[in-house]
Length: 175
Image 1 (tube, helix red, strand yellow):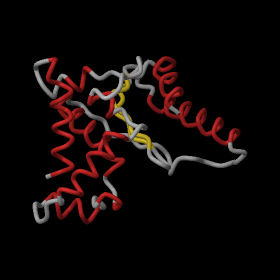
Image 2 (cartoon, rainbow, N blue to C red):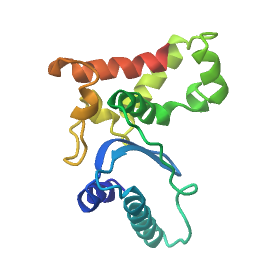
Image 3 (tube, helix red, strand yellow):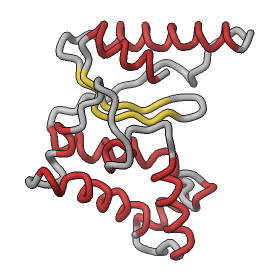
Image 4 (cartoon, one colour):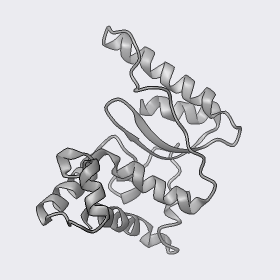
């Protein structure tokens, strides 16, 4: 999928700022200077489904429904959305962050235990199917992933951007 995402970047001139792959869908923050998002996503999803189905001798769709998109006009929103995308793999019941728990914690009615917070952060840091590890400085980014546009919102000082991004992500998981 990631190879095809890089190819989508090249074929359709989309800018890819963040991604997170889930079991039956994916989240991404992309920009389409040529207003061709539908064509790009159709090519990506069809290409991946064709490859996956042939490899595993199966038929049918892989993704849960059609792709959806929400326009983001302001770069500040892109920062918040990138954090949402990156935290998605650990925001479920297994980490005490199912829908109800997120509502309760979001209202400040319950803070996670230190053990829960540690498990969440460890899972986020080790999740290989997201661009978070590149944002946080744990691995290098593929050439097609634009980190600087979003990271520049984390700190004005270039040397502090990755640590500031890590701190913001950690704060959202542990508060």
